[in-house]
Image (cartoon, rainbow, N blue to C red; front, side, top):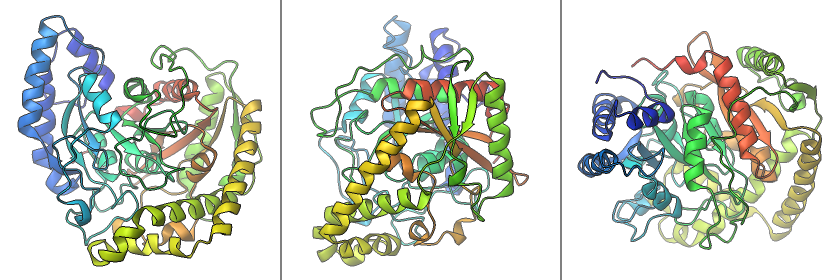
Length: 462
């Protein structure tokens, strides 16, 4: 088998036809890890022996006609906040270097039941918040399009590994954009599902009311395949919602006639930080969606700063509540960037938190009303392409509003897809926000856009 970049959908079809085996897929990923990850640092732990054994078992089952579904035999990796029974789960922190869970996260278990093969655990910002840091037990992940540049965070290893073909898919987490930012900076598709769609049980928490778990992969179709396996209610997660899970893959295909997309220009066009290449890529994407049959109109929402400020207050208050007992006794074991980002949470008062939650409800209803009129809302995933990693400031999250925080505040699903590359070869991201629990339509939009554009044909060259 010659080396190639597989999507999950392509590899799954090849497994069905016996054109490739799980063993070959795993060996190819492990070979890439061995060759490239000393530069990318996307993995904090690899499991070559266990992965090869699982691949041999999957190969036997598939040959015997017992393929469990489209993910059976597909090699994946998990952000190292997803607990894995008997396998170290560190949160990329020395605080949990010796943490070996007794049980899988619900999502970990569901993927294993679907037949995926776990290659290892992926780098993150410390506890999905503090990074990129250089004072932790593991180095920060690097962007495969240019290793001197930032992957986006906090699902940094997930972005790097999938873009470089070191895994065919991954799960990230998204509290303020931690799936969509690395998807944008690394050129992937990344989906933050509706709040309550995917269980967070067994996933190291950052914010009780903002955290989401979701897929990261090369295409929207691949994200649909992963979401199919992990979506659904879970009594272990009190935020889980008992809503029917549609057939996400069956929803893909066809044109976009009858769909209405609202462009939230106020979030980005007047911002002096908007990179001109990003602005041009978003304008071209809007025209492409029109060409595919969608009706596109401008929409006005509250200022981005309102959404972002609301998100920050809630996030750091809840994050401090989670870490306060440990940070009192093990302060110096946390990385400096995590401490700098966390400690303002100690200054959030009860009234501050209550008012932020009241504002959150107002903003959520505003977005509901906009989505009553439109199938989806559109704006960039990031104002800029990936910056040099050395220029990422510890307090950047406080200094400039992020385009990804509105969907965390509101709880709506949001998808980032690649919408082109800068002249320097760095990816750019288009963000689509959909109606609650209508991930299927978002994935249909992303898939239609990807099939109509050339961006999925280009991979990083390392």
